[in-house]
Image (cartoon, rainbow, N blue to C red):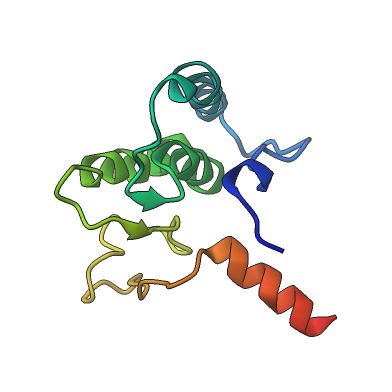
Length: 125
């Protein structure tokens, strides 16, 4: 099964008290952008997932401050001369996860993280 960005549930779980009000407000602003402004522009994302989906995942995983920093760095990386590609939110928080000398360094993936977990679930079944 191939999952698209729209089929991935990125809403916070009910009763999740770890989300701050600033984090929830940031997510609601991004969702508003996705619903109202993004459809009016042609698709031009260089990365998968898109910057807005990446920002929501980062905010949910690391909160408003850390997730916001990761989202801001992602937006700064998204420029016309960037190579793009698959860029998932890191499993371990570090602003330097893209550098090989960082303890949180993750090797670039050829498939998105969501697809990898689906394949592992199929293998176990």
